[in-house]
Length: 174
Ligand code: S3P
Image (tube, rainbow, N blue to C red; front, side, top):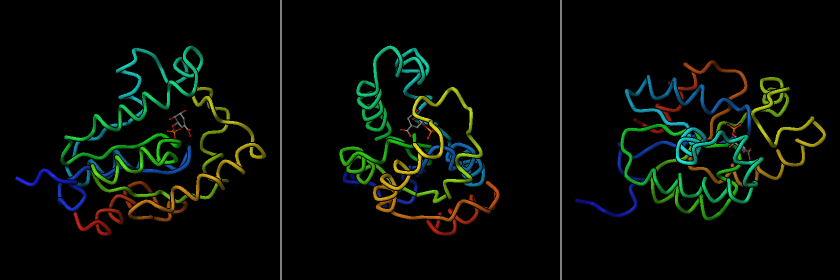
């Protein structure tokens, strides 16, 4: 059996990356349904393991601890097959996580304009890092330099989740 990095393996997990509000969870669910794969939301895995919501982890333990729980949750995806995983918006920003993800599966960037991201999530109190557009724009630009390193990219602004699911499965040939 091949025990090396499984990014070349057809049923390796698919990770969706992108900014807050890009649609990772919604598109991830649609993609999983389309492919008959399992769906996981990394923030939910982190919360379940910590016994706290993401908001509570940030408030009680701080962002650094959240990032370390996030890296551990990524590592826990190592044995997944036929799965779609929606990552949190900061997960792909760290080289350590990118290296793990490269070894585990395939990454797809949902490239969505900041205006659309912010419109979808404005006022959402469950996102501890969410600020107004002036605060978010530099973060959005900085993170773009990381997201562009994903294995694949799709323009996520205009298409419906179902259309994006079809586009991603065609792009990845799965
Ligand atoms: C974060 C995004 C959130 C969540 C956490 C940190 C980020 O996920 O992981 O609040 O750093 O951008 P979403 O991208 O699903 O909002």
